[in-house]
Length: 106
Image 1: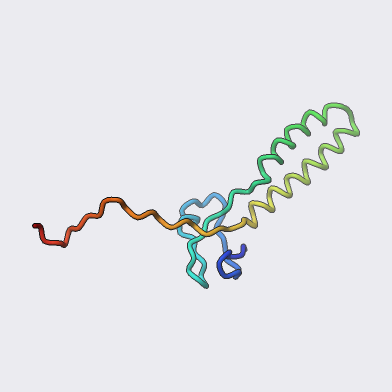
Image 2: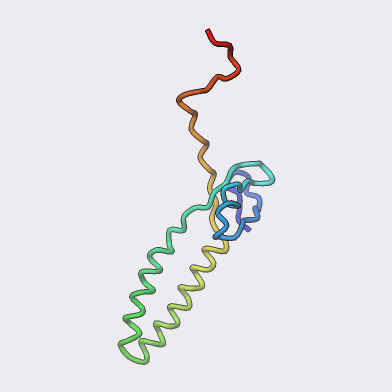
């Protein structure tokens, strides 16, 4: 569950990999079109994760510290994906050319 930025009500979010459900996500209370914000912290944490792999090779104590930090990073990333932040979807742009099919021709 995540909060709608427009009305602050809880919104049930689909599974992370279900792209079609994310495309049609709307708030059931205010009908605002919503989309998932990109998690800003995941990329630095993955870089830190890779650095911990090298730290684990320096000795037993460093390996234990690296494993504990890796578990903590994994939990933070999981929480970020399970409780995504939502933002309002930008409205579709107006078309530059309009087809007037029902208008009589001149």
